[in-house]
Length: 132
Figure 1 (cartoon, rainbow, N blue to C red):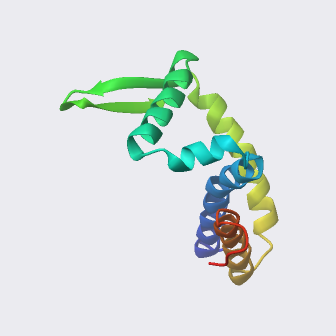
Figure 2: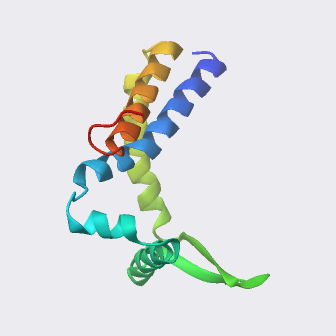
């Protein structure tokens, strides 16, 4: 396969690896009070929520949180070095599977597939009965 075709497949794989967790998250969303409360929350509340999630992953040893030496107000979050091989292996399995199913497609078919899933994600995030 030419290098340009390899790059097109890699780009589609990357897009799908980023998209699929969001789609699964949408499917698992509780349409009840929990989501309504998040929608009403302001930016400072949502940043606190992300801080709590990072804190939990930090306590479990999955993430490391350090201060930025240049700006003590900033925190640098990264995957803990001892967790990185497992996370890379987990991502590699999904990437290999996507690569296997996307490689036989034409560039136009790959783009249509990815664009369709992105359109689904956008529609799933819209209020019921509306079109975007």
